[in-house]
Amino acid sequence: MSDAAVVTVRDLVVRRGGANVLRGIDCELRAGHVTGLLGPSGCGKSTLMRSIVGVQRVESGSVTVLGEPGGSAAIRHRVGYSTQSPSAYDDLSIIENLRYFAAMLDVDRRRVAAVLERVDLVEQATRVVGSLSGGQRSRVSLAIALLADPAVLVLDEPTVGLDPELREQLWDTFRTLASDGATLLVSSHVMDEAARCDRLLLMLDGVLVDVTTPDAMRETWGSDDLDKCFLRLVRARRGGAPA
Amino acid sequence: MSVRRTRHVATRVLTQLRRDPRTIMMLLAMPVVLIVLLRYVFEDARATFDAIAPMLVGLFPFTMMFVVTSITMLRERTSGTLERLMAMPIAKADLLLGYGLAFALVAVVQGLLAGAVVLGPLGVDVAGPTWLLLMFAVGNGVLGSSLGLLASAFARTEFQAVQFMPVFVLPQMLLCGLFVPREQMNDVLHAISTLLPLTWSFDALQHVAAGDDLATGEIQRDLVIVFGGAIALLVLGAATLRRRSD
Image 1 (cartoon, chains in turn red, cyan):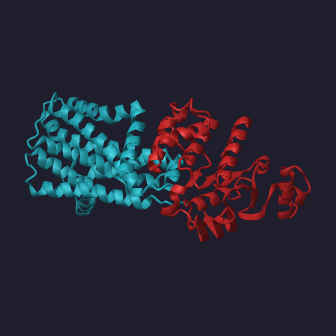
Image 2: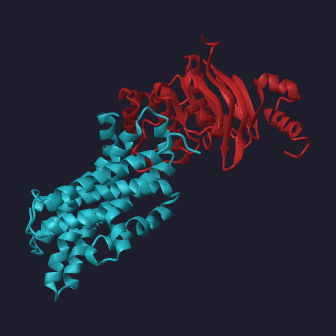
């Protein structure tokens, strides 16, 4: 079962503002894996993620999630999504936000306490989101994505602005979720996060330039430093232009 | 669609509003303050004030609800929470009806307050039934909310949303018959005013002020147009609320 593709993207093209933002993407995500989506800002990572959760208008191609077209009503409660900028109601408290989204997802209220613990926000639960730090907001946003205990979790830059300890903690959470059988897609533009992923989708200018693993990447580009590897790859693809 | 989700959306919108005392003051106190202000502007022309006060009780909710609703909905769009909701099992109707419900409740309180002040301390007489006056005040609030939800689809920033007021609200105010009776307008303006929903609620308010009740055919017609218009605008709003965006 863990070998079957949970998410399949075929020849996906997305146009925004007259330009092709995604230019024919093909990829598969498998259960039990944390797949990293990496690439410089503006390369189309968020657009691909939005397409997978079904909130992006697509030009052509297909997205299949859990056997259904991406974003269809039948699977929306099984797909967790956290937008790039933390999204919660600023004027509500953390717990009010979580209870509200739990109601929207038809999820038992007891899940609220469980996700609060998971993102380490139990003590701040009654604070209004607008008064939180950037890192705390990202965790609220992540907590909302975790509410439904989703089979597929799409997280757009979930660790931006977090301190190292918290980042470590969240990556542990991602690993636990994956080993429980969830399918995770996590985007980042920081290569040291790539090292924590099982598989890597490397994206550049709207195309996937490689589907690989951290080890294979180090080997191919001849460096232990994934940052360096990615720079070499970018240079090779863009024909020597400084990246 | 789910009644439970609609209720949760309405509760959430009202909780957000409760956290914002200034907006509540604006919504509940401003109509009263403006009406009292007009009472003194028309110090020497009591008859004029007595004639327009019931109209204002009916018309203020339209303006206030338009502004508040369009901005609240725009915030939902720009904060990412709308995108988040669109990725969830919620139906678009749950969201829009939830908003409509929350702001209809505010419109009820607003109408009751303004009505109480006009009919009480200010001593204005309304010949028709008071409840009918309030019903149209609420209907106008709901109409303003629905129009605001629709307008928010065309605004990218809160700055733009506020500027939509002159576009969506003022023409309706100018053409509804408050300033010049519709019979005196030229054919073009008369035809335009016929298409605007506020014209019909103003018509109803005039009938109520003149002593007509629900048995009057015109009032029944106006009631259908005002609440039907609000529902039609909500449906239009739902059409602009895209699950998939660019």
